[in-house]
Length: 69
Image 1 (spheres, rainbow, N blue to C red):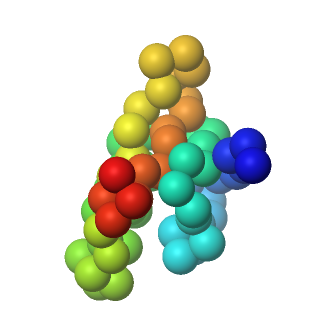
Image 2: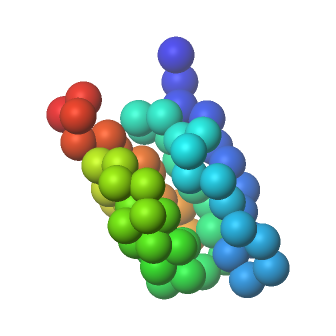
């Protein structure tokens, strides 16, 4: 199953990271904003995972679950 692409405007909205699955892509307007939101989410939820910047697109991040890798 191909990863889904989720568009997020980090300046005006908050994304619920609970819905992310391994390999999903996030298209964001601010990479730094998305990384900070993700860091706070991980801290409160205690979930393991990473956001990896895409090599092809400057505004795309991929979600990688540490439990699967």
